[in-house]
Image (cartoon, rainbow, N blue to C red; front, side, top):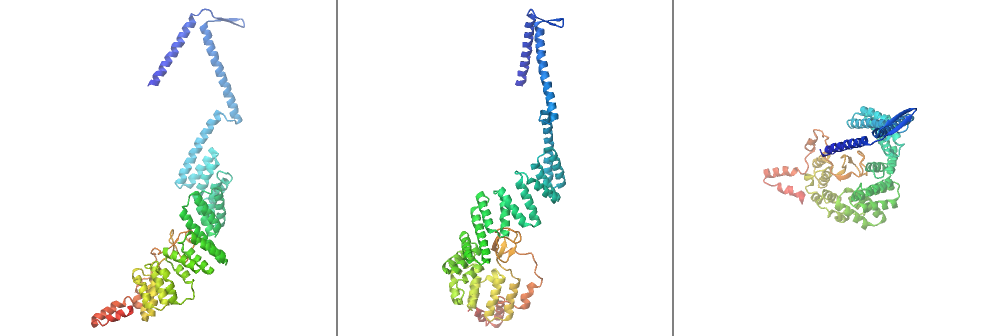
Length: 487
């Protein structure tokens, strides 16, 4: 409102000034006489003023027309002008509209529509760094792999889009199963963008699969530098790579390098079971039983495992069962309630032929956590105590249908591995294996499996009930019989 009032007042002031100036010029006497080709013109001061203003306007208009003519000539010649800029802005508007519509079609899963829009955007924009990427992704979505690969190769020609081109071709090679070429492309992509987290993870996985442990450790170090991997995780995975490197050296029968690599892996991650077992064997080869014992005890205190017990037995391979049972107390007293400790004690007692002690060592493990291993141990104990064949077969039948217990299981895909490996053979995850009980499988056992113990014969944990019934019927004479195995 105020601005409108100011404009009105300014207009009134200009009109007033012009009127006042015209009135004063009319009062001025005299004038000017102009003679042109015998024609005389007499002009008053007011007419002279108006004529001067008209002349200035005509000069301005002439200059503008000349400028327009020059602009038209430059436009025809191909030079940049206001007219060309107008058409350029119009083309850019249409091009970016097509690009936006192509991206929306790509996000909606309409690959053919996205390719049409990408072609239109390329026609208007002339920006291959934008339109080629859309074209490649649209071609992949539409299933035109040749078009996608050709477009990715075009992206390789520009320094700004080279990484995108390498990454696109690399993914195609992975889909085709050409891991060797994919590894080379992953290294190239890593050189272009060493801080790209996805490329780091992919390169690390491919290097681990190809057993390039030294290169994988360099990649892992770069992940630590760029902050894409916590320091503790880096320490653990570096130990995994060092252990894997040691296993490869072991296959080459280079014992010195094996010992050094295994000990390094155990130093970086003492809770890594395979590293502890291999490091202990390295110390055993050096004749250093003390260090081997210390390594295995530290690992056992974190996670009891059969491989650790096997390595502990190799410290003194020729000792008699009694001496071995005494020496193994260094392990068994660390985690006395752990199932692995109970089964280890039972095995040692069976080797020493002390079957009642073996049964006491197992405790109620066959009831609270029955596995194929502890049920088989129970069958061995019954055999050692002179039980009937039907009883032994009953335990073995239960072991046949019982879970296997803890195994090396992938945390990503739950795939079970017979031995530890740095990379899952199913999902190719790196450092995803852990020693634990796998989830219950969905594979159904044959319908008659549950009847096997009844067909083969009762296991010993069922005989006390039968004997108790006999004791009731005979006046308790059988009560002493049930207590005999416990003596």
